[in-house]
Length: 553
Image (spheres, rainbow, N blue to C red):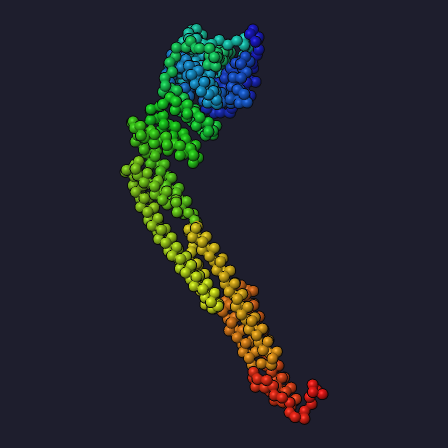
């Protein structure tokens, strides 16, 4: 409200600042304190400033104040008080021009940097150009920092004034600053230091810095046309967007929003290769696969545009492709890898050589990769051949099994398993194929063993039927077939298969012994009955005449 007076104490504002050891003209704590006060001043009347909707950019403003005028000096010359004042006007106009395209976190950061520059202008020795002035600047900074909590800012009005002429705005308030610097320097020479003129005037410097920062921000955010005559070049706007992309990637880790800013930059149709090179550098430093792909694209843009920095850009591209190729080579070392990694590595090294024709490293890596690729191809060919031989052997084994030649079938399956042992896991697809074939062969062997066991069981059953008709010799011959039948069962297949084999042999032996005993008993009974045993396979003789024939009775 206009005419309302309210007090902002420095100690309160200090709770908003971030920790830092970076030195600036006012000192980091003082700069953030001034900026924090200016935020409270402008938000008293315009509360959405730096807090639009659900967003809060206050930390970005303070971060900009901490970074200080050096941020602005990256694109504008600030080698005198006149250039510093001129830079303020250009920054105000730049931010006004930028604001319609998005006033986000970096916009707030630059508002903080602008506040820091304004603060430096208002403090005697805030801007130092000679070694003597820099020495005084350090003393003033240290003493102000020690007394920050002693001050308060009294704002007599919430109304802000737009800056129409930057030079007039500052000159009107800096008329006696030359004399002030002399008085402050004299106090330090006499040993009074901070307790002299600086102590009496520092609150005024702070107040002017706070009010001018708030007025500069107001000039930027107000919707009315600006009366400033500061010219903003297209290259300055391009540089702003480049730095915004850098801020979003490094500070905010916001890859998506950086892409939005890139679209704003594209509307300016930049043609300076250094713009694309700088963008590429920032994307590459971000370090994700997607950002690195983007950086390569931008480096290529810069390379195609040419210019004095083309050789530098080609060096960056060559270094990238060398690193990418080495990464592919490292991946190719992993089990199951190499099918695509080695060709990719080769392509990367070839690109590195394209951008640096003198790179002996690229040449050596191309030769190494070709050698490894050849060795791998030969190894793969051998593995494919082994699996083809195994497939042929399996077909032969299956044909033998179908024809009832179970022994040859099992031997054929064992040959297949032996062949497949030569398939290692370097090639995932071939290894998986071999493993699947092994599982199938194991099942086929088990199935064939089952057929053998059924054949042995059939021989036992046939022997038992022959015993029932007293054809003991024929029965014994059937039982004796059993060990021959089951001998084809391998001992190393499964424990149960081996045990089944032993059980079948033991059963056959028991059956043979029992059949022989039964034969002897049968022959003895026939002799006792007055008859004689029948010849093997023949009917028993009829009883002799006179013998007892119970059936006939």
